[in-house]
Structure formats: C-alpha cells, structure tokens
Image (cartoon, rainbow, N blue to C red; front, side, top):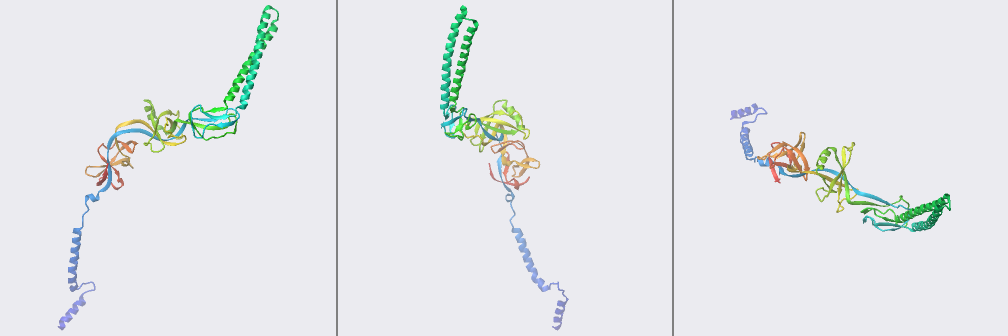
Length: 388
C-alpha cells in the first residue's frame, strides 16, 4: 500500500499546470456533450423567415387610358376691365353725395351734385346778352334792308349802304357768339351733376359734401368695371408656338381660380397676346376676359390660371407619385406577375388632375408602385398593401 500511495503521488507531480487530470476529464466530457446537443437542438428548431415576410410592403396602381386636357399653368393677376377716376370739371363746392362706398353703379347713375348757383347766374347772364344782341341785330338787319332800296334808287351812296350792312353783319356775329356763350354756360351748369360714365363698383370716397373741388384736379372716387374682368399672366416663350397653333382654330378657354384650379374656377377666353417677348424673363404676357358673373375675381388679386390647348384622347396615365426622378431620368417601378419590382425608364408628358401622361415606357393594364419606392430595388419581392 505504501507503494501504491507513492505511485499516485508521483503521477500527480508528473502532470503540468495546464493538464486536466483524468478524473476531471471524465466529469467534463458528459457536460460538453450535453451542451453540444442542446446547441444543435436549438439551431434545428429556429424558424426560417418566409418569402412573404421578406417582401417590401408597397402600394400600387393600374396604368389606365383616359382623355387628358393639355393645359398650360401660370400665376395671373386680376385687372379691372376699365378704370375711371372721377374728377370735377368745374371749381365748385360738393353739395351732395348720392352713393355709398363700394356700391355697384350703372352708367348714368348720379354720383355727386355740386353747388350750381354760380353757374345758373352765368347762364342767365349769357341768355340776357343773347336777347339784347338779337334785338339789336334785328334792328340793324331791318335798317340794312331799308337802305338797300335807297341805294338801289340812287338816293344814298354805296359807302352809306355798306355801313348799315356791316353793322347788321357784326351784330349777327355777336348773336352767334352769345349763343355759344349760352351753350357754354349750360355746359358748365351740367358739370354740377356728376354721373357714372361706366357700369362698375365704386371705391373709397375721397371727398365729402362741403369740400371745395377744383377743375380736373381733385379725385372724387375711382370706379372699376369688374363685369367683365381681365386676368393677365405670363408663360414661358417656348409655349408660344403651341398657343398660336391652337388659337388659329378658335379662341382658347382660360380657367382662373384663387384656390385649386379644379374647384369652381371661373371660365373665360384668351383675348390678347402681347406683341413682344420680355427678353429679361423669357416670358410673354397674355390676357383673358372673364364674365365674372359671381364676382369671384377681384382687381389686384393673384389667381391660378390654366390655358386649355386641347384634349389628348386615350392617353396612358399613371398617378403622379408613381413617377420618380433618377440620375438617368424619370422612371417607375412596375410590379411583375411574380410580384417582383422591375425598373422601367419612362418618357412623361403633361400632368393634370393628379395624373401624368406616359408617352413611352409602360402599357395600360400594368401595375406601378405608387408608394414605398425607397424600400425596393430591381428584382425586389413586393407585397401590395392596397391597390387602386
């Protein structure tokens, strides 16, 4: 037993510090096997992601064909059809104002009455002068007629007859001058009643009753004609050939609205194209006339304008959001039958009502991605969330 004890001690001394004794190795091996078995069992039991779970969620729309209006859009400014600044034509005191500010008036409506007493006196004086001179001219004409008989009989000389005739002619000329003075006095008196020269809407009252106004100096009120009304706008010069082309077949329709051009716009006609292109901006000014029956358009207002050139029948269209801009131009993602994404370059046309015309690149009936393009790439699996 003493030798066995020494033998065991010697074996313990022979093992280095990094060597696991046989007894410990026997205990660790079953544990390692158990851990390895658990690890293999965990790997075998883990769920594998399905193809549907890896697909990118997107929304899609079907490419359709429809009639699309070809329009040119711009920002316009509303202008009064005509503007009149009412002024007095005589020096007088305003006696009465016959309208309220902002009132709609018709041509001929009474606006102001001026103090007419000085002009009535002038008219009476001119009429009196006319009556006096007419009496004198009548007497001079009678004398000339009597002296003509005496001259013909040789009783008076020609110089005497010419004197009577000249006097009668001078008084006749004075009568004509008096008549002109009477007409002028009546005209001045007529200026004491100021009437509206146009149909329109009055602005702010600039003077009131009791104010002294001077001839052609003081502005009394401004009247704007708003039925009809103008809308002026400018478009890039490259659209000019198209506008002239379609204008040759008839007047073009113009839509104007202070908000969304598709919601309750006013409809007018293109009436004027400026005779020159603005070289500083490369644009040309146009003007449309609108009946403005609902008074929706107001002078000085900025509005959205659309000029309707024509209607493109059976156009291939997609929603605006389906068209993306890339380094090589515009493109769309087409949903293939196997539910993968296909990169498709396109050539776009006009846009209207949230739809873009596709001139080349897709066909009616195909489906295009309208939302979620940032999450996909050519060949990516797709999952359609909703489809229109």
